Length: 233
Image: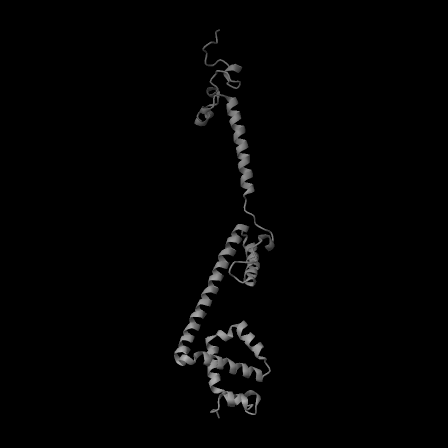
């Protein structure tokens, strides 16, 4: 009993707290560890060990979660799997942009998510550009139509029909079928171009139906220049 109450006496197994004993395990730690406030919350080595194992499991799960959500960078352009279609835009345009952007994204080291966002943004910009161009053309056409309507009044429709009829007749003189000529005007949108409309109206005024009935013009004895510009030397 001589060691009872002696602070220098060796600890017994019950004093370490490792097995749930009543000893103060924290006081038995080295001095540098006793200064760690986080350790004071544990009642023994066993609870500290359990906490350590729990933390290791949580860390492992966190690592797996990070690895699972790691951005994917493809190793070839096809790996980006960018769409070849975009609502409202021509398929040919969307397909070409998709192909080019896949190559650019690979060279820049973009992730699939980044490339996808870039494709959507670029297509939206291109589509808006197309809409702006169409709107500008429509405004210009409306201005030309208003000008021609003001100029020809009630005879506007008749003047337009005559103008395109003359153009079709001239096309026939050089071997172009009327249906093919009309299809060209419709498909190429040349027939809606304000400059061409003015040209067609002017041409109809220079070339009368009598010229065609007499076989003159491009298919007759007179040259096209003489028919279109009779006053030119």
